[in-house]
Amino acid sequence: MDKISTAAACIRGLSFDGDKGKILSFFTETPDAADALKLPALPDSEAEIIDLIKKEWKGQSVVSLNEGGCLVLASSWDDVQALAAGKTAAGTEFAGASAVPAVCDKVALVTGGAQGFGEGMVRELAAAGAYVYIADMNVAGAEKLAAALNEELGSTRAFALQVNVTDEASVEAMMDAVARTTGGLDIFVSNAGVLKAGSVKEMTLKDFQFVTDVDYTGFFICTKFASRLMALQNAPTGKYFSDIIGISSKSGLEGSNKNGAYAGAKFGSIGLTQSFALELVTDNIKVNSICPGNFLDGPLWSDPDRGLFVQYLNTGKVPGAKTIADVRKFYEDKVPMKRGCETGDVVKAIYYIVDQKYETGQAIPVTGGQVMLN
Ligand SMILES: NC(=O)c1ccc[n+]([C@@H]2O[C@H](COP(=O)([O-])OP(=O)(O)OC[C@H]3O[C@@H](n4cnc5c(N)ncnc54)[C@H](O)[C@@H]3O)[C@@H](O)[C@H]2O)c1
View 1: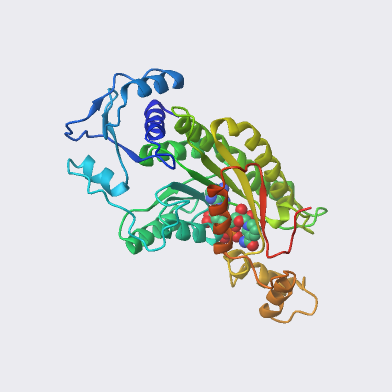
View 2: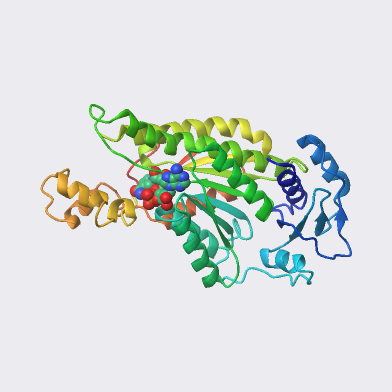
Protein backbone atom coordinates (compact mmCIF):
# COMPACT_ATOMS: atom_id res chain seq x y z
CA MET A 1 0.00 0.00 0.00
CA ASP A 2 1.58 3.33 -1.00
CA LYS A 3 1.90 6.24 1.44
CA ILE A 4 -1.11 8.18 0.16
CA SER A 5 -3.37 5.10 0.32
CA THR A 6 -2.05 4.41 3.82
CA ALA A 7 -2.82 7.96 4.94
CA ALA A 8 -6.28 7.79 3.34
CA ALA A 9 -7.16 4.56 5.19
CA CYS A 10 -5.91 5.99 8.51
CA ILE A 11 -7.96 9.16 8.18
CA ARG A 12 -11.06 7.15 7.23
CA GLY A 13 -10.38 4.99 10.28
CA LEU A 14 -10.19 8.03 12.53
CA SER A 15 -13.49 9.33 11.11
CA PHE A 16 -15.20 6.13 12.41
CA ASP A 17 -18.56 6.99 14.02
CA GLY A 18 -19.07 3.67 15.82
CA ASP A 19 -20.52 2.08 12.68
CA LYS A 20 -18.52 3.24 9.65
CA GLY A 21 -16.00 5.85 8.49
CA LYS A 22 -16.63 8.76 6.13
CA ILE A 23 -16.20 8.60 2.38
CA LEU A 24 -12.79 9.95 1.44
CA SER A 25 -11.18 10.51 -1.99
CA PHE A 26 -7.85 11.62 -3.34
CA PHE A 27 -7.77 14.61 -5.73
CA THR A 28 -4.80 16.06 -7.60
CA GLU A 29 -6.13 19.66 -7.20
CA THR A 30 -6.63 21.05 -3.69
CA PRO A 31 -9.78 23.18 -3.22
CA ASP A 32 -9.79 26.36 -1.10
CA ALA A 33 -11.10 25.40 2.32
CA ALA A 34 -10.83 27.48 5.47
CA ASP A 35 -10.26 24.46 7.70
CA ALA A 36 -7.82 22.57 5.41
CA LEU A 37 -5.09 20.62 7.19
CA LYS A 38 -1.63 20.81 5.63
CA LEU A 39 0.16 17.56 6.43
CA PRO A 40 3.97 17.48 6.53
CA ALA A 41 5.75 14.91 4.30
CA LEU A 42 4.45 11.39 4.97
CA PRO A 43 7.10 9.26 6.73
CA ASP A 44 8.27 5.92 5.35
CA SER A 45 6.75 3.39 7.72
CA GLU A 46 3.06 2.63 8.25
CA ALA A 47 3.44 3.00 12.01
CA GLU A 48 4.89 6.50 11.61
CA ILE A 49 2.13 7.52 9.18
CA ILE A 50 -0.50 6.32 11.68
CA ASP A 51 1.17 8.33 14.49
CA LEU A 52 1.42 11.45 12.32
CA ILE A 53 -2.25 11.30 11.27
CA LYS A 54 -3.39 10.68 14.85
CA LYS A 55 -1.43 13.74 15.98
CA GLU A 56 -2.41 16.11 13.15
CA TRP A 57 -5.95 15.26 11.99
CA LYS A 58 -8.65 17.01 14.00
CA GLY A 59 -11.71 16.36 11.80
CA GLN A 60 -10.79 18.62 8.86
CA SER A 61 -12.62 17.73 5.64
CA VAL A 62 -9.73 18.72 3.35
CA VAL A 63 -6.23 17.34 3.98
CA SER A 64 -3.56 18.81 1.73
CA LEU A 65 -0.62 16.48 1.11
CA ASN A 66 3.02 17.56 0.93
CA GLU A 67 3.44 14.90 -1.79
CA GLY A 68 0.89 16.78 -3.97
CA GLY A 69 -2.89 16.67 -4.13
CA CYS A 70 -5.28 16.28 -1.24
CA LEU A 71 -7.74 13.99 0.52
CA VAL A 72 -11.34 15.18 0.88
CA LEU A 73 -13.84 13.53 3.23
CA ALA A 74 -17.56 13.85 3.91
CA SER A 75 -20.57 11.71 4.82
CA SER A 76 -21.45 10.92 1.22
CA TRP A 77 -19.80 10.57 -2.17
CA ASP A 78 -21.81 13.52 -3.54
CA ASP A 79 -20.64 15.75 -0.68
CA VAL A 80 -17.01 14.75 -1.28
CA GLN A 81 -17.38 15.82 -4.91
CA ALA A 82 -18.98 19.14 -3.86
CA LEU A 83 -16.18 19.95 -1.38
CA ALA A 84 -13.50 19.01 -3.92
CA ALA A 85 -15.11 21.47 -6.36
CA GLY A 86 -14.87 24.24 -3.70
CA LYS A 87 -18.64 24.12 -2.99
CA THR A 88 -20.51 23.53 0.27
CA ALA A 89 -21.47 19.98 1.25
CA ALA A 90 -25.26 19.62 1.15
CA GLY A 91 -25.37 16.84 3.76
CA THR A 92 -26.78 14.49 1.13
CA GLU A 93 -28.32 11.32 2.54
CA PHE A 94 -29.25 8.02 0.89
CA ALA A 95 -32.61 8.61 -0.79
CA GLY A 96 -33.55 4.99 -1.55
CA ALA A 97 -36.64 3.60 0.14
CA SER A 98 -35.01 0.28 0.97
CA ALA A 99 -32.05 1.30 3.17
CA VAL A 100 -30.70 -1.60 5.26
CA PRO A 101 -28.97 -0.32 8.43
CA ALA A 102 -26.33 -3.12 8.45
CA VAL A 103 -24.86 -1.87 5.16
CA CYS A 104 -26.28 1.62 4.43
CA ASP A 105 -23.48 4.11 3.64
CA LYS A 106 -20.85 1.41 4.14
CA VAL A 107 -18.36 0.56 1.40
CA ALA A 108 -18.56 -2.95 -0.09
CA LEU A 109 -16.64 -4.71 -2.85
CA VAL A 110 -17.87 -7.77 -4.73
CA THR A 111 -15.41 -9.69 -6.90
CA GLY A 112 -17.01 -11.31 -9.91
CA GLY A 113 -19.73 -8.68 -9.53
CA ALA A 114 -20.52 -8.25 -13.23
CA GLN A 115 -22.88 -11.23 -13.54
CA GLY A 116 -24.58 -14.11 -11.75
CA PHE A 117 -24.67 -14.17 -7.95
CA GLY A 118 -22.21 -11.26 -7.85
CA GLU A 119 -24.45 -9.03 -9.95
CA GLY A 120 -27.43 -9.84 -7.74
CA MET A 121 -25.41 -8.99 -4.60
CA VAL A 122 -24.23 -5.72 -6.15
CA ARG A 123 -27.79 -4.73 -7.10
CA GLU A 124 -29.20 -5.53 -3.65
CA LEU A 125 -26.35 -3.91 -1.72
CA ALA A 126 -26.59 -0.70 -3.78
CA ALA A 127 -30.38 -0.60 -3.33
CA ALA A 128 -29.82 -1.06 0.42
CA GLY A 129 -27.65 2.08 0.49
CA ALA A 130 -24.11 0.67 0.31
CA TYR A 131 -21.39 2.03 -1.95
CA VAL A 132 -20.39 -0.96 -4.07
CA TYR A 133 -17.32 -1.76 -6.12
CA ILE A 134 -18.04 -4.17 -8.96
CA ALA A 135 -14.65 -5.85 -9.37
CA ASP A 136 -14.43 -8.22 -12.31
CA MET A 137 -12.23 -9.45 -15.13
CA ASN A 138 -15.11 -8.46 -17.35
CA VAL A 139 -14.62 -4.72 -16.87
CA ALA A 140 -17.04 -3.82 -19.68
CA GLY A 141 -19.79 -5.73 -17.86
CA ALA A 142 -18.83 -4.08 -14.55
CA GLU A 143 -18.92 -0.61 -16.11
CA LYS A 144 -22.28 -1.22 -17.75
CA LEU A 145 -23.79 -2.41 -14.47
CA ALA A 146 -22.30 0.52 -12.49
CA ALA A 147 -23.67 3.04 -14.98
CA ALA A 148 -27.14 1.46 -14.92
CA LEU A 149 -27.27 1.39 -11.11
CA ASN A 150 -26.06 4.98 -10.70
CA GLU A 151 -28.69 6.08 -13.18
CA GLU A 152 -31.43 4.13 -11.37
CA LEU A 153 -30.41 5.40 -7.93
CA GLY A 154 -29.88 9.00 -9.04
CA SER A 155 -26.45 9.27 -7.36
CA THR A 156 -23.09 7.54 -7.52
CA ARG A 157 -23.23 4.32 -5.50
CA ALA A 158 -21.46 1.84 -7.78
CA PHE A 159 -17.89 1.84 -9.13
CA ALA A 160 -16.40 -0.54 -11.70
CA LEU A 161 -12.92 -2.00 -11.22
CA GLN A 162 -10.96 -4.41 -13.40
CA VAL A 163 -9.30 -7.23 -11.50
CA ASN A 164 -7.98 -10.73 -11.95
CA VAL A 165 -8.21 -12.33 -8.51
CA THR A 166 -5.47 -14.85 -9.36
CA ASP A 167 -2.92 -12.07 -9.93
CA GLU A 168 -1.33 -10.44 -6.86
CA ALA A 169 -0.32 -7.23 -8.66
CA SER A 170 -3.85 -6.80 -10.02
CA VAL A 171 -5.47 -7.27 -6.59
CA GLU A 172 -2.94 -4.96 -4.92
CA ALA A 173 -3.60 -2.25 -7.52
CA MET A 174 -7.34 -2.70 -6.97
CA MET A 175 -6.97 -2.09 -3.22
CA ASP A 176 -4.90 1.06 -3.86
CA ALA A 177 -7.66 2.28 -6.19
CA VAL A 178 -10.21 1.60 -3.42
CA ALA A 179 -8.13 3.53 -0.87
CA ARG A 180 -7.94 6.54 -3.20
CA THR A 181 -11.61 6.44 -4.20
CA THR A 182 -13.43 5.85 -0.89
CA GLY A 183 -10.58 5.81 1.65
CA GLY A 184 -11.23 2.21 2.65
CA LEU A 185 -13.62 -0.65 2.74
CA ASP A 186 -16.11 -2.19 5.18
CA ILE A 187 -17.21 -5.39 3.42
CA PHE A 188 -15.14 -7.47 0.99
CA VAL A 189 -17.08 -10.24 -0.76
CA SER A 190 -14.80 -12.77 -2.44
CA ASN A 191 -17.33 -14.10 -4.93
CA ALA A 192 -15.44 -14.57 -8.23
CA GLY A 193 -15.43 -18.26 -8.95
CA VAL A 194 -15.26 -20.76 -11.80
CA LEU A 195 -16.39 -24.36 -12.22
CA LYS A 196 -15.01 -27.06 -14.48
CA ALA A 197 -16.45 -30.45 -13.70
CA GLY A 198 -14.70 -33.66 -14.65
CA SER A 199 -13.75 -37.16 -13.59
CA VAL A 200 -10.62 -37.46 -11.48
CA LYS A 201 -9.45 -40.09 -13.99
CA GLU A 202 -9.79 -37.72 -16.96
CA MET A 203 -9.33 -34.15 -15.77
CA THR A 204 -6.19 -32.38 -16.93
CA LEU A 205 -3.90 -30.81 -14.35
CA LYS A 206 -4.33 -27.52 -16.22
CA ASP A 207 -8.12 -27.55 -15.69
CA PHE A 208 -7.72 -28.62 -12.06
CA GLN A 209 -5.32 -25.74 -11.42
CA PHE A 210 -7.51 -23.24 -13.26
CA VAL A 211 -10.35 -23.94 -10.82
CA THR A 212 -8.07 -24.03 -7.77
CA ASP A 213 -6.36 -20.75 -8.75
CA VAL A 214 -9.61 -18.78 -8.85
CA ASP A 215 -11.70 -20.51 -6.17
CA TYR A 216 -9.00 -21.18 -3.55
CA THR A 217 -5.83 -19.15 -4.24
CA GLY A 218 -7.90 -16.13 -5.33
CA PHE A 219 -9.51 -16.02 -1.87
CA PHE A 220 -6.04 -15.98 -0.27
CA ILE A 221 -4.78 -13.17 -2.54
CA CYS A 222 -7.91 -11.07 -2.02
CA THR A 223 -7.82 -11.52 1.76
CA LYS A 224 -4.11 -10.65 1.82
CA PHE A 225 -4.64 -7.20 0.30
CA ALA A 226 -8.15 -6.44 1.63
CA SER A 227 -7.03 -7.22 5.19
CA ARG A 228 -4.08 -4.81 4.93
CA LEU A 229 -6.41 -1.95 4.05
CA MET A 230 -8.97 -2.94 6.69
CA ALA A 231 -6.26 -3.30 9.35
CA LEU A 232 -5.05 0.23 8.59
CA GLN A 233 -8.59 1.54 8.98
CA ASN A 234 -8.80 -0.10 12.37
CA ALA A 235 -5.29 0.85 13.57
CA PRO A 236 -5.92 4.45 14.75
CA THR A 237 -8.92 3.61 17.00
CA GLY A 238 -8.77 -0.17 17.51
CA LYS A 239 -12.58 -0.16 17.26
CA TYR A 240 -13.30 -0.38 13.52
CA PHE A 241 -14.93 -3.73 12.62
CA SER A 242 -14.96 -4.89 9.02
CA ASP A 243 -15.90 -8.07 7.17
CA ILE A 244 -14.32 -10.41 4.66
CA ILE A 245 -16.87 -12.84 3.27
CA GLY A 246 -15.95 -15.79 1.06
CA ILE A 247 -18.60 -17.22 -1.24
CA SER A 248 -18.01 -20.95 -0.91
CA SER A 249 -20.72 -23.42 -1.89
CA LYS A 250 -22.76 -26.35 -0.63
CA SER A 251 -19.96 -28.24 -2.42
CA GLY A 252 -17.63 -26.80 0.24
CA LEU A 253 -19.55 -28.81 2.87
CA GLU A 254 -20.17 -32.08 1.02
CA GLY A 255 -18.28 -33.82 -1.79
CA SER A 256 -19.45 -33.39 -5.39
CA ASN A 257 -19.30 -36.31 -7.82
CA LYS A 258 -16.97 -35.71 -10.81
CA ASN A 259 -16.51 -32.15 -9.55
CA GLY A 260 -13.51 -32.60 -7.26
CA ALA A 261 -11.51 -29.57 -8.33
CA TYR A 262 -14.41 -27.27 -7.45
CA ALA A 263 -15.48 -29.01 -4.24
CA GLY A 264 -11.85 -29.31 -3.09
CA ALA A 265 -11.24 -25.60 -3.63
CA LYS A 266 -14.50 -24.68 -1.88
CA PHE A 267 -13.73 -26.96 1.11
CA GLY A 268 -10.25 -25.42 1.19
CA SER A 269 -11.65 -21.91 1.21
CA ILE A 270 -13.48 -22.78 4.45
CA GLY A 271 -10.15 -23.87 5.97
CA LEU A 272 -8.74 -20.51 4.91
CA THR A 273 -11.78 -18.75 6.39
CA GLN A 274 -11.24 -20.38 9.79
CA SER A 275 -7.49 -19.72 9.76
CA PHE A 276 -7.70 -16.12 8.56
CA ALA A 277 -10.45 -15.47 11.13
CA LEU A 278 -8.14 -16.55 13.95
CA GLU A 279 -5.38 -14.21 12.80
CA LEU A 280 -7.39 -11.18 11.67
CA VAL A 281 -9.55 -10.98 14.79
CA THR A 282 -6.75 -8.83 16.23
CA ASP A 283 -7.51 -6.25 13.51
CA ASN A 284 -11.29 -6.45 14.18
CA ILE A 285 -11.73 -8.12 10.79
CA LYS A 286 -14.34 -10.88 10.85
CA VAL A 287 -13.87 -13.59 8.22
CA ASN A 288 -16.81 -15.82 7.35
CA SER A 289 -18.04 -17.84 4.38
CA ILE A 290 -21.45 -18.39 2.85
CA CYS A 291 -22.27 -21.75 1.26
CA PRO A 292 -25.10 -21.25 -1.24
CA GLY A 293 -27.07 -23.99 -2.92
CA ASN A 294 -27.54 -24.13 -6.68
CA PHE A 295 -28.43 -20.78 -8.26
CA LEU A 296 -30.68 -22.37 -10.87
CA ASP A 297 -31.73 -19.04 -12.42
CA GLY A 298 -28.11 -17.85 -12.83
CA PRO A 299 -26.07 -18.10 -16.04
CA LEU A 300 -24.01 -21.06 -14.80
CA TRP A 301 -27.16 -23.22 -14.88
CA SER A 302 -29.53 -21.40 -17.22
CA ASP A 303 -27.31 -20.11 -20.05
CA PRO A 304 -29.12 -21.46 -23.12
CA ASP A 305 -25.89 -22.50 -24.91
CA ARG A 306 -23.35 -23.40 -22.23
CA GLY A 307 -25.43 -23.70 -19.03
CA LEU A 308 -25.41 -26.85 -16.90
CA PHE A 309 -29.07 -27.63 -17.74
CA VAL A 310 -28.24 -27.90 -21.45
CA GLN A 311 -25.01 -29.78 -20.77
CA TYR A 312 -26.70 -32.29 -18.45
CA LEU A 313 -29.56 -32.80 -20.90
CA ASN A 314 -27.16 -33.42 -23.80
CA THR A 315 -24.88 -35.75 -21.85
CA GLY A 316 -27.79 -37.71 -20.33
CA LYS A 317 -26.56 -37.06 -16.80
CA VAL A 318 -30.14 -36.95 -15.46
CA PRO A 319 -31.77 -40.37 -16.10
CA GLY A 320 -34.98 -40.11 -18.16
CA ALA A 321 -34.81 -36.32 -18.64
CA LYS A 322 -36.14 -35.29 -22.05
CA THR A 323 -36.28 -31.50 -21.63
CA ILE A 324 -34.49 -28.73 -19.77
CA ALA A 325 -37.55 -28.50 -17.50
CA ASP A 326 -37.01 -32.18 -16.55
CA VAL A 327 -33.37 -31.50 -15.64
CA ARG A 328 -34.36 -28.45 -13.62
CA LYS A 329 -37.05 -30.38 -11.73
CA PHE A 330 -34.53 -33.09 -10.90
CA TYR A 331 -32.29 -30.51 -9.19
CA GLU A 332 -35.20 -28.70 -7.51
CA ASP A 333 -36.40 -32.02 -6.07
CA LYS A 334 -33.05 -32.49 -4.34
CA VAL A 335 -33.84 -29.42 -2.21
CA PRO A 336 -36.25 -29.87 0.75
CA MET A 337 -37.56 -26.36 -0.02
CA LYS A 338 -38.04 -27.34 -3.69
CA ARG A 339 -36.36 -24.37 -5.33
CA GLY A 340 -32.92 -23.07 -6.27
CA CYS A 341 -30.94 -20.57 -4.21
CA GLU A 342 -31.52 -16.90 -5.14
CA THR A 343 -29.27 -13.90 -4.68
CA GLY A 344 -31.70 -12.45 -2.13
CA ASP A 345 -31.10 -15.54 0.04
CA VAL A 346 -27.33 -14.98 -0.08
CA VAL A 347 -27.61 -11.24 0.60
CA LYS A 348 -29.63 -11.95 3.76
CA ALA A 349 -26.67 -14.02 4.98
CA ILE A 350 -24.36 -11.07 4.21
CA TYR A 351 -26.57 -8.78 6.32
CA TYR A 352 -26.52 -11.28 9.17
CA ILE A 353 -22.73 -11.64 9.07
CA VAL A 354 -22.13 -7.88 9.01
CA ASP A 355 -24.69 -7.17 11.72
CA GLN A 356 -23.50 -9.99 14.00
CA LYS A 357 -20.52 -8.65 15.96
CA TYR A 358 -19.88 -11.86 17.94
CA GLU A 359 -19.09 -14.42 15.26
CA THR A 360 -16.15 -15.16 13.01
CA GLY A 361 -14.66 -18.13 11.15
CA GLN A 362 -18.05 -19.64 10.25
CA ALA A 363 -19.36 -21.19 7.06
CA ILE A 364 -23.08 -20.48 6.78
CA PRO A 365 -25.19 -22.78 4.61
CA VAL A 366 -27.90 -21.16 2.46
CA THR A 367 -29.15 -24.31 0.77
CA GLY A 368 -32.91 -24.62 1.40
CA GLY A 369 -32.03 -27.57 3.67
CA GLN A 370 -30.16 -29.51 0.97
CA VAL A 371 -26.92 -29.60 2.95
CA MET A 372 -26.98 -29.32 6.73
CA LEU A 373 -24.13 -28.77 9.18
CA ASN A 374 -22.99 -31.74 11.26
N1 LIG B 1 -24.14 -20.70 -9.54
C1 LIG B 1 -24.29 -21.55 -8.53
O1 LIG B 1 -25.16 -22.43 -8.57
C2 LIG B 1 -23.41 -21.44 -7.31
C3 LIG B 1 -23.72 -22.20 -6.18
C4 LIG B 1 -22.94 -22.08 -5.04
C5 LIG B 1 -21.85 -21.23 -5.05
N2 LIG B 1 -21.56 -20.51 -6.16
C6 LIG B 1 -20.41 -19.62 -6.13
O2 LIG B 1 -20.86 -18.29 -6.29
C7 LIG B 1 -19.86 -17.53 -6.96
C8 LIG B 1 -20.46 -16.87 -8.19
O3 LIG B 1 -20.93 -17.88 -9.05
P1 LIG B 1 -21.82 -17.58 -10.34
O4 LIG B 1 -22.55 -18.81 -10.66
O5 LIG B 1 -22.58 -16.33 -10.14
O6 LIG B 1 -20.68 -17.38 -11.43
P2 LIG B 1 -20.71 -16.69 -12.87
O7 LIG B 1 -19.86 -17.53 -13.76
O8 LIG B 1 -22.10 -16.38 -13.30
O9 LIG B 1 -19.97 -15.29 -12.61
C9 LIG B 1 -18.64 -15.27 -12.16
C10 LIG B 1 -18.07 -13.88 -12.36
O10 LIG B 1 -16.70 -13.93 -11.90
C11 LIG B 1 -15.87 -13.31 -12.86
N3 LIG B 1 -14.53 -13.92 -12.78
C12 LIG B 1 -14.18 -15.18 -13.13
N4 LIG B 1 -12.86 -15.35 -12.92
C13 LIG B 1 -12.38 -14.19 -12.42
C14 LIG B 1 -11.10 -13.75 -12.01
N5 LIG B 1 -10.02 -14.56 -12.09
N6 LIG B 1 -10.95 -12.50 -11.54
C15 LIG B 1 -12.02 -11.66 -11.47
N7 LIG B 1 -13.26 -12.02 -11.86
C16 LIG B 1 -13.44 -13.27 -12.33
C17 LIG B 1 -16.55 -13.55 -14.20
O11 LIG B 1 -16.13 -12.59 -15.17
C18 LIG B 1 -18.02 -13.43 -13.83
O12 LIG B 1 -18.49 -12.10 -13.93
C19 LIG B 1 -18.73 -18.50 -7.27
O13 LIG B 1 -17.73 -18.42 -6.29
C20 LIG B 1 -19.42 -19.83 -7.25
O14 LIG B 1 -18.54 -20.90 -6.98
C21 LIG B 1 -22.32 -20.60 -7.30
